Image 1 (cartoon, rainbow, N blue to C red):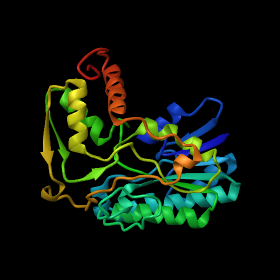
Image 2: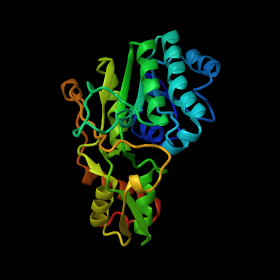
Image 3: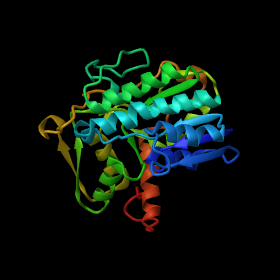
Length: 291
């Protein structure tokens, strides 16, 4: 399959490139190489490639910054996906667009499935919901994949926190916000199998269990015998610019029927990530990755 990938410089984009089988032909674009908010640039770059599939992993994901930069949030997260949907329609391609659990307000009291009604409570969430709506209205031959609490991409919150714990430092984790922590590699591995079903629509692909970041860090510290200290944090007490849903865990009522495999256990994902971080540090059996 000929694939155009946007957001190739981000964590999910890199994971997609690493896990995509080699028999696929992938043209990958970082933000510097293709600004998806530029309609003409998208049409002039993507359409001549004549891809069979466009995978959009590009987004402005700095939740608090979206509050102070709403124009960029809507350009990157709403207008950009719409541009890609129009390009896909022009060249007869499918589109897979990645969205977020933050489209929900977090007040359900149970994991959200695909039939629950979104109710965004931040600029970031509104802009991402706008992208979902634009894609689905412009291109029926599309997949919108909601995920959340993605980790392991290199510059994400959890990766940085694990590095601090490995160095014997403190790392804070929210105790009052719950999601479904999702290992970026496991997410990337499931995108093409979903596309190959040709069952277009909206799907949730999240981690295997709800957890707070404090819980995740505590488990990672125990698994890796990390010397640092995990500190409780409460989002309500930090004065963050953007509101975050209290409980935004995801579940799917459709993917199992499609044959898309469930995510492996969270502890296994943490072990794999810490092993990769250890290898990157050149320590082999050093602190990160030991158990």
